[in-house]
Length: 181
Image (cartoon, rainbow, N blue to C red):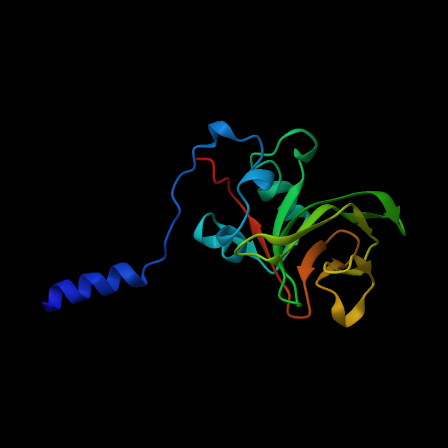
C-alpha cells in the first residue's frame, strides 16, 4: 500500500465514530426507543455527555428538558450506567419529595439493566427508588444504603450543593443533548 493511502486509512480507523443525526419522527421518547446496545456501552459516541457526577444545579440548568421525552418522562433526567457488577443500563432521575432531613430526595423513577447489553438479554426494570440525602444505592439489587456494593451516591455537600455520583467502580454518563437533531 502506498504511504499516503496507509496514512489516510490509519486516520479513518483511529477517528471517533459519530452516529450522526437520527430521524426521530417515528419515536415518542428517546429513553424508551433509542437508548440500547452500543449507546449504553459508549453514549459519548452519539452525544455529548458528562461523566461521573452531576450536580442538581447542573441538572436544572444544562440537562433537564434537553432530550425528547414523552408523557410521564418529560422533565426527568437521564443517566446511562455501568454498575460495579458489570451490568449496563439506563435510568430516569430527579430531585424532589419526599423530603429527608429537610432536603429533597434523589428519585430514581425507572432503572432498566441488561444481563447482556449487546443482545438485550434479561432486561430488568426496577420501579421508583427514593434515596434520602447522603445515602447510596446498589442499582443491581435496588438496595438503598448498600455500602461497598453501591453504584450511586446522593452526595449532599452542604444542603445547597447536591450530586448524583458514581462510586465503587461504577460509571455514570449523562447525555447533554438529544440524538434527535
